[in-house]
Image: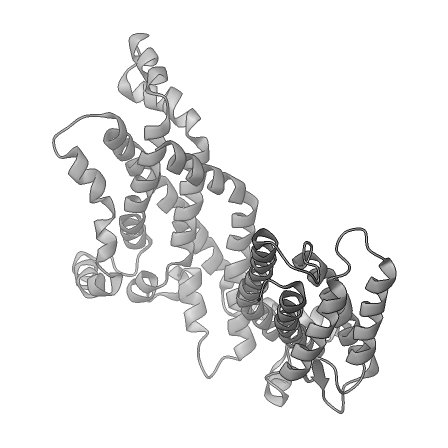
Length: 404
């Protein structure tokens, strides 16, 4: 019965309107500071009605029907009976933005969802395809909101001053007319809180961690993948066993050992302990990739008189650049974002890493916008690095998984 088009279309339309109304209401509330909230019953009703009309838009149907549904949704959304309710003080511009967003986004997206849906009997393929498209759209919106909303709140909070936060801490809109005054918190972090030093410390430690990790992981992974020795299989399977022991359990022994040896509160202590947490995962990632490389190429190099180390340097590593890039990026992100060890072992502000420096801002004496600005400074560089090198990371991971 549910595979009837006149049941599937309004059902998916009603649910999709709820998803969109919640999304648009939250987005406009953050962007404008005006109160918007979704009306669930209204969303279910208007979504079902509009989806019935949208079911007739699939394929080469009349564009008049599309415009009719669009204008009807915009008109309803301008009233007090639309899918989204507004406060009495909401301005006309924000109201029109809300109505247009509801109409345009719903008509465009529901046409994608109901591409093969008509008001008659649906085949199993048509019904399942429509449901999958609905769930896919919901997943995109849900997970995008989980990622973007905290980041948006963090950025907007960092651009405010103390009086604005005290007046309305839930207002995440921004006044662009202030110009460079919006960046006051960032300027104070670098001039008064020594954040330039924290950035350089984190970069220095992360780069060193990457080099040390690769120096141990490359020969180790190659040995596991290519050489034959007693206990090879057991070693290969037990590489990641270190992650079964939570770092918090090792915190006290590490603190005592580093205090007794004079390594606490030093760069070299941090550089020594960070690779311990990154070498196992680097070994695991690289051994799968090395196994996927053609052994005939390496054997030809050995027959030509190259030593095993020369084969690794001249043949294996050039062929493994995608895997090395992905491992380097992953290790760099681990070292850049590490907090527990840095918090436990570093006491001198001149040696703080970025995460340790941000923790020092979490005080009642320091304005909240400075903490948010510090979080933005820590997040943006690693985000830009990941987005810039993401194709190498994906290529390295998938190549190792398929060939290994």
